[in-house]
Length: 220
Image 1 (cartoon, rainbow, N blue to C red):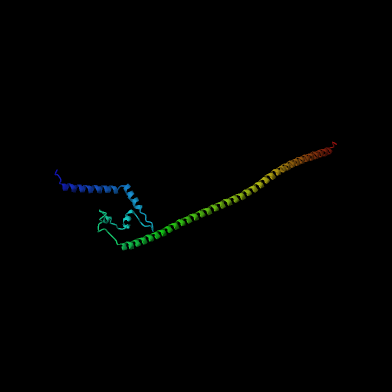
Image 2 (tube, rainbow, N blue to C red):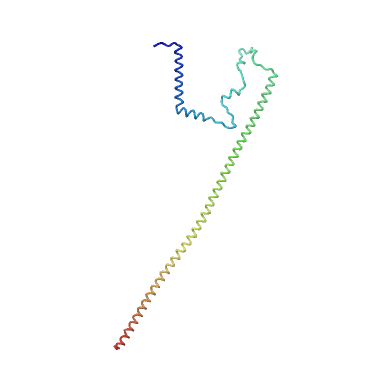
């Protein structure tokens, strides 16, 4: 087997590395767990209307441009002549501008503080309003409970009246039953007496008939 030169070995290694990376990338992209992680990461990007986007990547661009190397001093008694310098007049002018900017930013900050307190106060107002709504709801619930109580009282009174009527009816029916029994007993006695009377009348009439027959036969 022929030996590869150093350049050939390097080229072969590079090709093998790329093939390995491609295979690894293909395996990773086909991995459901990796795909799910990528999808979840993509879904975490949320844009809030009116809210500025800010990450640590934005910090450098917001800072003043400053080359600290230009202020490198080796000998404190002999500072370099090419060090950035400003005149007293330019310093005073620039300082006044910076101070004015600082004051403007402070006032702007106070404006945002005011807006913050406004939102805090509005939140408290909403919270108080919500508490009022809850109170009104509880009051209405108590009213409903009170109406249920009054309604149940009327129902109980109606039941009490119905019970009184039923009790009176039971007493009346009981007393009537006694009289009904007595009446039936009297009617039974009357029927017995009528039967006895009829029997006596029958006996009397039969006796009279027998007497009449004797007279006809000349036995008397």
